[in-house]
Amino acid sequence: MIPQDTIVALATPSGSGAIAIIRLSGDDAITIASKVFASVSGKDITRQRTHTIHLGHITDGQKTYDQVLLSLFKGPNSYTGENTVEISCHGSTYIQQQIIQLLLRSGSRMANAGEFTLRAFLNGKLDLSQAEAVADLIASDNEASHQIAMQQMRGGFSNEIAKLREELLNFASLIELELDFSEEDVEFADRSQFTELLQRITFVLKRLIDSFAVGNVIKNGIPVAIVGEPNVGKSTLLNALLNEERAIVSDIAGTTRDTIEDELVINGIGFRFIDTAGIRETEDVVESIGIKKTFEKIEQAQVVVYLVDGFELTSDSTQLDRLKIEFERVKNQFPLKPLIIIGNKADKLNKEQTDAILNAIPELFLISAKNNIGIEELKNKLLSFVNTGALIKNETIVTNTRHYDSLFKALEEVHKVQFGIQSNLPADLMAIDIRQALYYFGEITGQVTNDELLGNIFANFCIGK
Image (cartoon, rainbow, N blue to C red):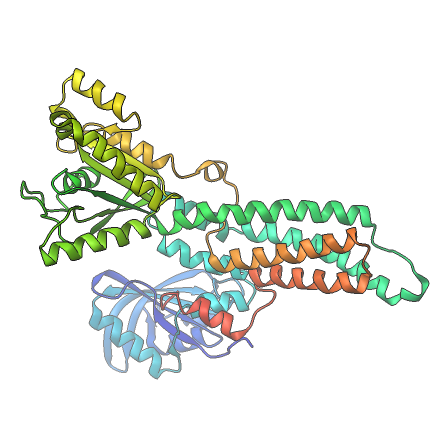
């Protein structure tokens, strides 16, 4: 059911600012706005053309609250598909509150989270995956996540799914037609063409499902744990990567007793760096808790940066052997996590010492966090763990867990249909699996929905959008 009442909400962030925008949407939006808006030129805004802007005052009887600009958008040519009014007022929180309360008294109600976009979906202005992309676009904080959200909002993902669904639907219709003529034993759907279609659908679904691994890290950022023994320069490295004094740096071992996190965007990809407490045997209760958290963060991280004191490796020959054993322990404990072994304080090493260390541990990456040596190379190394090929080619990338789940279930149903053709199963059995595949395609774009699904999706939106 498409709601008929008129909703109102602040469309800009709450708090004081230069301006604020208050949005109204619904059949009576223009009528309600006309009750509180007095044009400086005396115009009746209910008689004005769509997509026009008017200067005037918001008044309540003899009281004037503000001079504003009022923008008119008449349905269906608006974001929501309904009559929409946007009032641009000065950004005082008092003014915002007074205008909203005045509009509520005049016949509107407060909008729920995401209700403007929900109405855009219900009125056919956006499909469901495009509506979800609106929330992703608002939340995007780097170039890659912004690019993916824009591509999805423009309908790239929807168009790909819609095309597959339409082709499958055409064959489904022929299969269903065969059921009406089951006694005549005729085939309307060419099985060889149907097999080719299913192979093409399988290829596309697998590509989209595989893209989720990249899309998920782009959307949520890649957690990188910086670990190692105390006083090897973990906090200095975090500060060098972020180019700010984020973590406390001290000559005293065990300065970092808790995890410190911050985010850095490298070439449009977000990385969440976690500076952890130094790993060592200790009787300090607080420090031991920090070390326990370190191993928890390694568990959560997707990339582990293991930092050692490169200068100490040259002063004690047993250090190299001990570190090799420690590296193997981390690799064995977390075999699926990329491990970058870094030797810090490279500025203190001469060429002979450097060559000796690299010969002993070839995979070691030498830097100087204090002097900013090797930091850019480290960033490039981190970036190499992200498969940005699909992003560069502007291919469709799945970032939404709900979409991933529906694609996976659709692929399972397609596999069942393929098995049905190979096994020469009756058309009525294949029709069941085809309908189910179509159902999961429809779930993505919103052709199949329920109130609970919509409630879960739009509850994550901000009010005013």
